[in-house]
Image 1 (cartoon, rainbow, N blue to C red):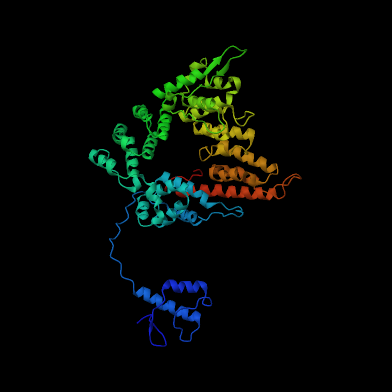
Image 2: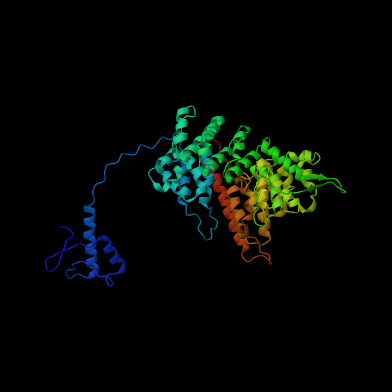
Length: 549
């Protein structure tokens, strides 16, 4: 019999288990001799003999698996095929998943950082992913959550088909609406009701979103019917889904949610209502905020007088005002900020003498309340997407103070910029860089549309050139340089030719900085040329070549 050992007295020995053999191999035969009849062979050879016999025994003892149902064929993808040069480029980008590593990159582009742009362009053209590239695409998206939306859009229905066969790609099913399940036709009322009553939570959220896009009233009816029986965390998620397509028709439901037993649900309902300038909550907040802020004409020049609320009553709490301030904040200033943030910005035109937002922001504020008041107006402008107030609070980009007249930080300024049109946003940031340089512009550049508009691109290149001439090390600007590689218009490459040479070093310059700058600009030039080539490769057959994105 295979694997049966016999002792010298003729008695059969129980063969060692596989775990015993592994343990002996790990500890070493000197510390743990193999428990097998060696027949004079050395212990290591006896261990290997026993392992070989055990391997045969394990394989021979396997029972055949039960026949499983064959997988359904992968769904068809009717989108046009990717042009051959673009398919080869995709393979190169995916093969470079390891990126540049932690060492010095030299003048070579970071291919993995170009993959998001490549995917966005491929999706804009409506191409289908090559089937052979799908596993590498899903592996890349598995490691980088920022790639997942574009990757799944490009991979199409076959991504979900593959995700059902490989648990490593289960994120694709979680990211798909309803976990990849097919939603019923919104016209099929019975199927919709059944899924809403019996479906998984992800399926119900997807169904609500689909109905909101076509029949908002029906979506609210479904939500209202089961609202009282939903869990608090589910109510919060359902409520959050109303942000898309928020309209005055949602006000009655949101008003009802103000009385919810969950504080988070109440706060979210109040936030959504304050984003509707004509809502009853916005009107109530306007009355409260106006009672705290007034125009003082008693001095030599008009000023804003502030009287913070003396208490946070039950009505304020019901409308979303959080009574307890965070550590380090005074109660009254905390309540004031919430009231002003939730009040419609149109309140202040009439309350403060018919002035424009720029004129209001320019008014002095008495008793040290300016920072608190302007910060609340900043949050209100972002929440209400009010471009006029955002311009006033941003101020001129050439203002001496980089923080602006109303923003409490550059992060707040970036949020205000996001409410402006792309062209205006780029022009403002270009002016900011021309005045203040690049050291404080990184967050602002992050909200500008890609590729950067010509004035912004020129401002960034000029500022980098100034930093180089000043003798600074380029890695002080590595974040901006990385953004430039991904965001500059490839047409700007022609302006970089003069920056590729190693400049003469100044006496006060950092040693070797010139060589590093030349290398950084070489990498920037190579990346821009590569992006231009990518755009040409993705252009449909017969279309004119382009140098942009």
